[in-house]
Image 1 (spheres, rainbow, N blue to C red):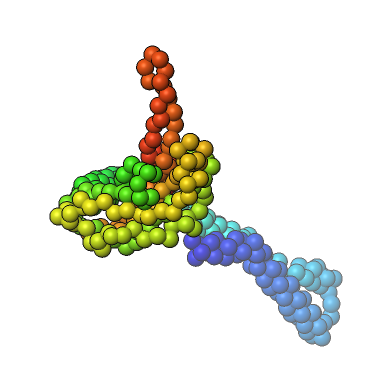
Image 2 (cartoon, rainbow, N blue to C red; image 1 turned 30 degrees about the vertical axis):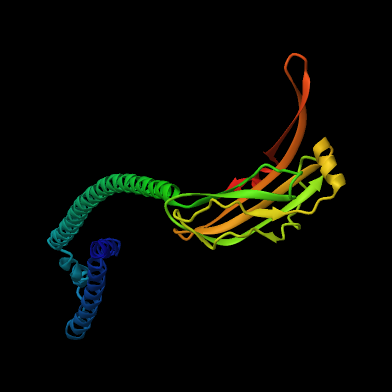
Length: 318
């Protein structure tokens, strides 16, 4: 496009310049007139020197006064007009050529623009299709991830069920408290499971309070629960009843029997199962004495038994 624009500017510049041939013509005619006048003056001087001036001499002098008028013949003007017409035709042809080239350039640009637009539309269509495929792949990946997570959860649930079925479980069951005999707390160690348990720690303690609720804190749990084996298997005999000796005054015994004071027995056992998981069994019992009536004649009777007390974490199994 730039060469075409430069050609058009050059042609327009040439068309605005003034025509030089008429100026040259005027100059030649003036020169011719001067030459003619000089020749005429020379001839007059020669004639006056040879012959005296007759009565007709001025007439002849007037006839030859402007001999250059013969040079201004009308035949030179058509040639100039033809030359100008030729230049106009050439200029017009160049303008037509420039216009044709500009039209061709516009057509080519239109074709290029159309092809570019078609390519852009094709790219947009391809991008939309690729986006749809990407969305489908993302959806499938999410479904696969969910299925994998579900499978993992199912496998974990199955594993936990297997561990729960095969793991060792230990808990404590105290025997009825007999305050008339030797003052001690007997308890039974119960075991359930198909795999062994490895004892890490076991402590217990007793307390007497004015409330059925135990005192806070485990400061008094300083007595080891013995004899408890360090490893318990399904084949370990647990028929023996370990006991925990307690110190209690006669006043405490009468208060417990009268239901004004309460005797507490609590502790914990920590162990590790075969799956290398630490477990803990905690317990908290209170010896309750309460009175009721039996029969139609309302015979008073005293009831005594162990009852679990305390917060939930005081009686739990992990």
